[in-house]
Image 1 (cartoon, rainbow, N blue to C red):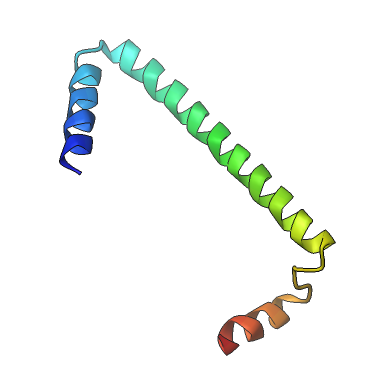
Image 2 (image 1 turned 60 degrees about the vertical axis):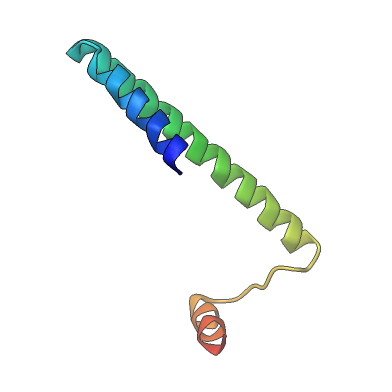
Length: 73
């Protein structure tokens, strides 16, 4: 964990040395990349769910059915 923190501190120091315009550009790029990674994760999850559904491994039902199922665990 300490090495990870040291790396993060180094990155933050580097960012602090950038101009405000460069920092804004960096934030914009980082946000767009983060959004894209989330989209990719959603796509992977949906594909996995569809495979499970096609194999008959996924349950179907109403929201009420889901709530009952979750409460029974």
